[in-house]
Image 1 (cartoon, rainbow, N blue to C red):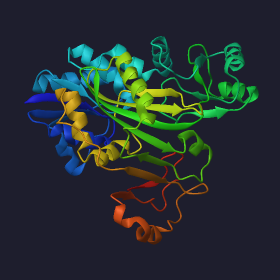
Image 2: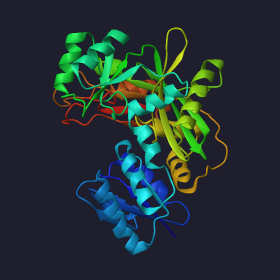
Image 3: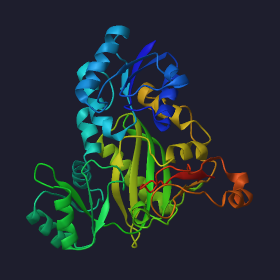
Image 4: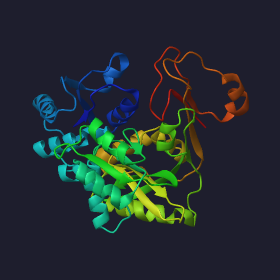
Length: 380
């Protein structure tokens, strides 16, 4: 049996789907390094577990893997799906001499400023950006790109840590509120306006073998600024048209430029009013926001196994054919506080129930989510 270490701080269902797929691969004994162990039947996913007090600590991850190494032998692979853990996993691979993404490549995908610098140097279109740690740097960048602009942590994920600033007072106030400094700068970018979507790949041997294109309706930043909007993500069945050629060209070039060998990537792209494509950012992980699940439905296959095969075996199961259009609407309530009621369920079921393949209704009494993914979803 091949000892494969899966690092995951917490036993979230979205994470365990990938762990189950890895555990089912031929000849794999799945070992875990976790901060909180899964309970009940999910505990059996792992042949052995080591618990640590900080699941994001490189030192504790390496120490946990060393315990497993002494019990089960040298790990064949060290894997995980969480974006904030990719650099630590890469450092653990380097420590134990295990194949997989190296720390330099992982850092390029994780640090959005370094990523954009590398992509721009390769001639790829990215938003103008700068790391702001001082008032002088902020004022200089504002003179260059104007307002509005967006601010985010250098290692943020998508739009979840992103917000818009409309003038210099807002910019300087935001930098003060975020305690920006030369040692802890904030990433500022020009505001990209237009269609937005994702370009997701299965990459093997440094070459994207499968590429999926999705559209966000509307953009996540717009959704965060308008709590009444029910955000949607759509995967059209046919993405072979010429309008997707530039998305595909830029996306493939981005993956190859950053140097990923085997795994999934998730890139966000914008199409401006003039038709030009600009890269938002790219991550070395499966897509979130139910897009992984939607890719599986669009291609009629198990996307979690596909990820496991890529990162453990460096392989893919046959050719992929896009068979269906898939969409997901995220349910976002109006107001603040806790979910007090869920209405319209029967009307929705009567109207589109025959096409619903998965749904999660908001939980009564649960705190309102501040994410664009809201408090529930419906996939058709």
